[in-house]
Image (cartoon, rainbow, N blue to C red; front, top):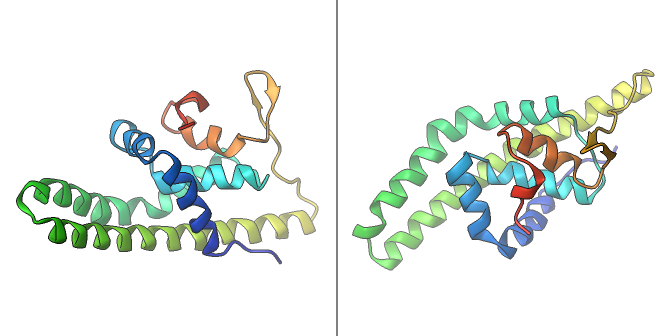
Length: 161
């Protein structure tokens, strides 16, 4: 059984580095979870479609952790920036990155559960996830990104280029 491994986050990080400000803007302006958006884009590249219910489930899995810890810490770091030395601020960024990695681990565990359930469903004769139409055309190349962004009322035009 194929599962997703930590290296998926390295691929996501490379995508993020292409336009970090655009991802941060989506995070700050629309409360988009950058890890989930990057995961959606990576799964699109791998032609591994998930349904909208899967994206809702992935969002719910990390929401308590993100709301209770990560977002609070991010806000604290941003507030403290003006009062810290460069070295102190970099240390805060490193802690935030550690917290982000925790979110990524949680997502990785859950995406592997979804994957295992999908394999089990296919073995029992249940239908595989169907592709949806986007603007009237079948599109699997960006289905995950479309599903995830739709949770925020956004479209694919909001994706960083």
